[in-house]
Amino acid sequence: MEKRKFIIDCDTGTDDAIAILAAFGSEEIELVGITSVNGNVNEEYTSKNNLDLCEYLNFDCPVTHGATLPLSSGYRNSSDITHGKTGLGSIILPDATRTKFDSRMAPLFIYEKAKELKGELELLVIGPMTNIAIALIEYPELTDLIKHIYFMGGSVWGGNVTTTAEFNIWADPEAGHTVLSSGIPMTMIGLDVTLKAIMTIQDIEDLRNNNTKASNLAADLLDFMVIRRDKGGEDLVMHDALALAAALYPECMTYKEYWMDVETTGTYTRGHTFADVRNKIGNKANVKVAMDVDVEAFRKWLVEKINNYKV
Ligand code: BDR
Ligand code: CA
Image (cartoon, rainbow, N blue to C red; front, top):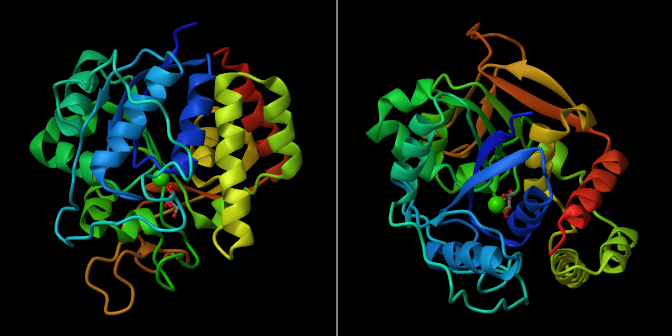
């Protein structure tokens, strides 16, 4: 069977890295590129993390640079306790020496791949949506060339940066608005489900016992999260891998369809993904939204995917 074709657009990031490892182990897809964006840490780190990850695990796929700033809000992260200074927690991967970045920037790369794949390209967007928004603005015909976008971002109820805004959308609300109003079919995996997707010590053991470079790296990333949690930070939350699960194992979640937009002007709600839950506005639904998840099934799936990668 033809493999589904994906680009992962990401701000790697501890949980982004785990999603990437799971994608490496997913034989039903072909990863045609990894595009990097400013987000959890600056783009110089997120792109380096992506290139280093591919080389460290002998995974052959183009990696590009991408947006270093959001469309307009000027947000630029300077590292925090969630992902460590360089994005991979306390993990330092060997510098990539054999491989180089693709010469194209993310928006052009996405556009050219979408054209080449004639409507078959799917996107997994697990960072701020800046690259996708720029691509849509620069190449409007891209709208008809992308089959589906699965994105980690937003939430129907409640945020993690402000009361109502989730990080990826809050970091670039204008980009979120551009993408959500594009008309491309999309599935949102927001905090409504991702905050439930917490890995356990048993999962770390199952990864360690598999004893590949990939599974040990995932276990190291989760160990960092244990320490982070014990210091009062975020738990072992798999925001980004859950977005991959929505694409490859959709049965582990339940969904509703809503018309959604991103607040770009609210005094208190900038970056909020507004869902017309009571259908007061009456527009046709544009987003399929994950509302609940079978956490045990997801955790099992994730460990299996990572353990399936043989390097
Ligand atoms: C999102 O923000 C980042 O910290 C994670 O990588 C995830 O994509 C969760 O709000
Ligand atoms: Ca991310």
